[in-house]
Amino acid sequence: MKKVLMILAAVPVLFGLPAAAQAPPQQPSAADRAAQAQAAIEAAKAPPVEDFKPSTLNQKGKEYPAVNSERRIRARVVAPGAQSVALDIGAVKYPLTKGDDGAWVGASIPQDEGFHYYQIVVDGAQVPDPGSLYFYGASRWGSGVEVPARDQDFYALKNVPHGQLRETSFYSKRSDSVLRCFVYTPPDYEKSPSKRYPVLYLQHGGGEDETGWGSQGKTGLIMDNLIATGKVKPFIIVMASSYVPGAQMGPPPAPAPGAAGPGGPGRGPGGPRFNFSAFERVLIDELIPFIDANFRTLADQRHRAMAGLSMGGMQTRQIALANLDKFSHIGIFSGGSIAPSEITDMDSFKKKVEVVFVSYGSRERGAAGKANVEALQQVGVKSVFYESPETAHEWLTWRRSLYQFAPLLFRD
Image (cartoon, rainbow, N blue to C red; front, side, top):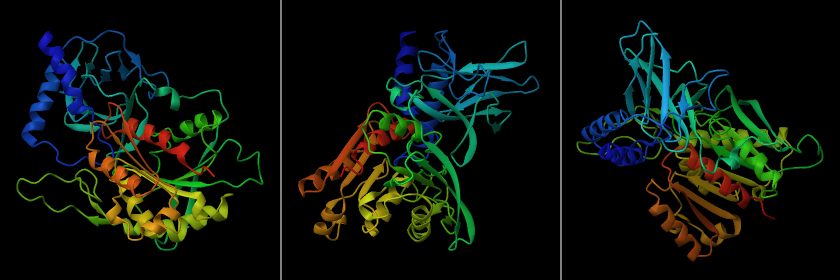
């Protein structure tokens, strides 16, 4: 039993990474991944603590999936005619056991705190769990489960004034199509018809879409709670899809022998490459003018920010550096950083940019980002580095990043 507990303690570091956004570089080899998966499956056979509670992301009245105090996920699926059923979470397929009632039941090893994508595998077919709500991630609609976090209070639903998350359509002439974005407006937006607001443009990661920040990211609740405590000045947030027509460039090239798999700039995990300039033109030429024309914004560079997670952070870096006349605050969450050598006119940059914010999970490779932040500080750029404790490339990292970034914005 002691050996099993040691495995249970070690494997979450390897498998706490949900199938979200963009995978970090230098992934383990296929053989290593297979060995790690088998170790996790064996560790999951240890009897769990029987204090499971339904996930907060379950459909109404559904008891499964459930989470216990060890952060283990238990699934239960009624499929009497199936030959095999598994819980696919954290890059591991945990076999479920069939009972006399035709229901398949089983549990994972402990998962990281926060949100996780998962699927049910029935006779080899990956399907969403009928017990959970559905979320768009890993380039598909699938299930989600929430492991309660110790610091979840900052994104909890509370009895405070709440803003609105508006589904908004706009016509893109460049795309010759109607595109969708989500717009968060603060609680006092409707009550103060003469008041105008700064705007943050907040981008999703690879394999996700414009629903991510409002749903998985808890953006509205984070902002409502921050505004209620007076930690931020109210501002509008615009969350648009990066997948505009012309953005996709085709499948990724085959890696060279011995090279790491996909996951470099502009790619999702194993997915297609993307042309960031396609979204840049929609954002700069069409979306920003549309938002300024249809919402009560402070329509100047000083009151406009851009941020994003993973691929969205990479987009933010590229677009903001090329359009410093549009953005005064830059946030890059798990998506690179800005080195002083990449800034062509440092004096102009320091005059225009109020803050550069870079964040990573403690289990990501964020050392270069931290070094670049320190280098910017040395040359007089206001720059902040944040490391999310005990998280990897996952939504709790990015919820915390937004929570840390928002109070730095628009501090006149």
